[in-house]
Length: 272
Ligand code: HPA
Image 1 (tube, rainbow, N blue to C red):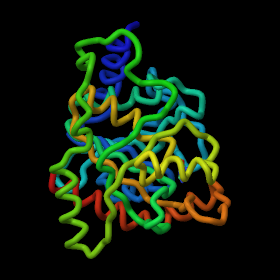
Image 2: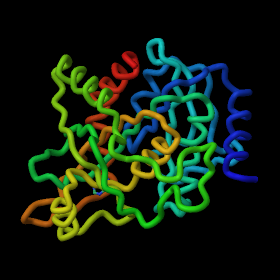
Image 3: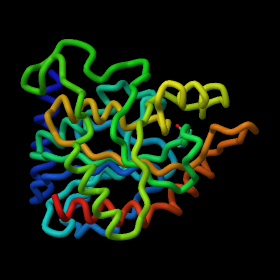
Image 4: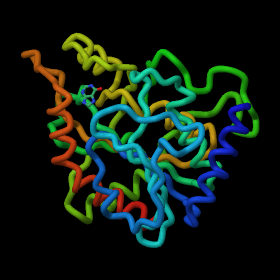
């Protein structure tokens, strides 16, 4: 079956399981699961039941699609995402984003935990992603292009929607939440970066580094959906003393910032 046919088959399966017609799709990153409590839930589908879906393997990712409403907005949440470092191809990593489009999603919201490469940042900061640098070894659009899914050479000059960035900043200001804006650089992982790599990434123009998001955003843009993405900074790698980073610390910092981020995204969705 072609990719297009698999997307359609998966979307048909999902339409049988839920009455929600989502216009927003939200990908929840590490430890940022607060939205699963905020959504007025209508249906839950474990990834393991969904045809053509890969199965999530990482600790802290439960692996289900949740359908319902946030305010008046019909949404689907991806609780648990697929990472390239787990061994999935980029086509597998981004398959759920294709399915979002097929289900009618117009706006994709992505969150992640990221390392700070900007020395002015602090642990727990929220950073609205305004642009990205892709240095992952595989591109999600490599291979024959199916015009039904998008154009061969997608424009990426406004990958992160300027209107949504402005709206998120407005909401943050209203709530007294301080937010950074910056450039996210996507690497394959799974190692955290060396001190020399952190310095290099900062020189390259990145404010934050992570192992997700970029491929999902590329595919969302290929499919002509609007994108908003936000990182929680879980560690700062640029310092004179090399700092140790563990997955536990990353999750802890992400969990600590979760209510702030969830509140911001909740309000953003309500005002879409
Ligand atoms: N690199 C460094 N720190 C991080 C990352 C990463 O990919 N993700 C979360 N914190």
